[in-house]
Length: 413
Image (tube, rainbow, N blue to C red; front, side, top):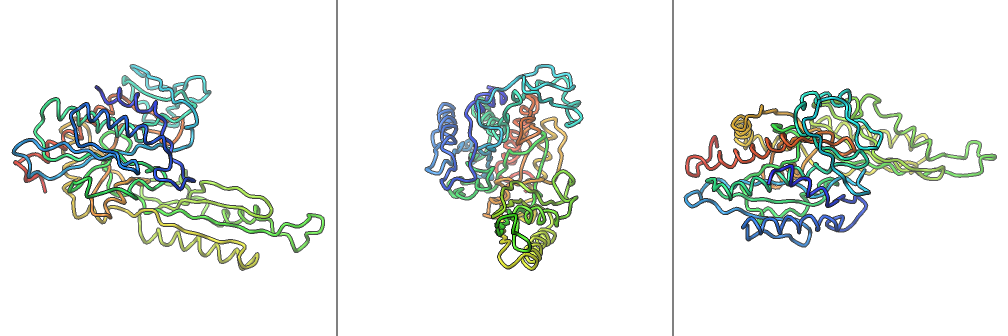
């Protein structure tokens, strides 16, 4: 089966995670996909596959005889999708021999535009896969799952010589909890790659340092007719807080290694208001400066409007894996070799986000990230090509071959 054919099956099982949930996984629907994958792995002949009580799927492909001493290589993708634009059935649309021009997405009124996504021109002639414009597609990260599953099938069917290969699919990555209950001992790998990036050929090992921040604002609500010097409108204070942040340090205004403050949610009335942000920066020093900026804002607001008006809570989420991968740069060199062997130009780029691999790296499992061939994640403009998925699958297969070279010593280790 081709990777894109698997993707079309997997996206039919909706798996939005739920940031408000206290359960693990945060949504029961993720078990449905995990169990589907479990059955598929059994059909391939991978008999030790299992799904644990927290919806982590682990599986292993035993080494080819004579390759037992090869490095233990792992591949990881996540089961869940974002919850936004995932409230109805996902209907994929397949556009064969795509012309590289603007494309209406079903009858949604949305246009997949080359002005918005200039790379669309480079996809001319490919088989483009989109949703109907009313939902996400779900390629983040079901494309990664499909590519890993196809890789496993080809290793077995084509009898490709290989060392020990570990596979894991995790829940709740989109809410920052994908690595929280990951069992590294059960996974049993020396190092791994997540397949959770964008363009095929992407190799990423520098991710954001990340935190979330919440301002709880308490106002004073009295009758507006007698509110002179008494009322404190919590919603106006919340607007004031946001206005104190640098206006040009938002996701829209930054790129590359530049960090940002991102207002993800706000609600309120006169009596109370809430602002929720995510804070991101590749530089650990600048990351700490960003958090200190928020603390200074909290202090100034309370000095102006009264003690306790604003209460700031900052929660660290993950760190830049670059400091860990620096000790395992063979992962990056061999990923470049795998891209070249697969006929794909390697693209070493910083991640403007995070992956399970960032947290896993700090838990002792070095784990850079690879592209899956997708674009426009987390919204109705998400799209991917069958050719990009095939290339990503070939890259994973080439990595398996590279780490099986030299009868177990590992290439470039």
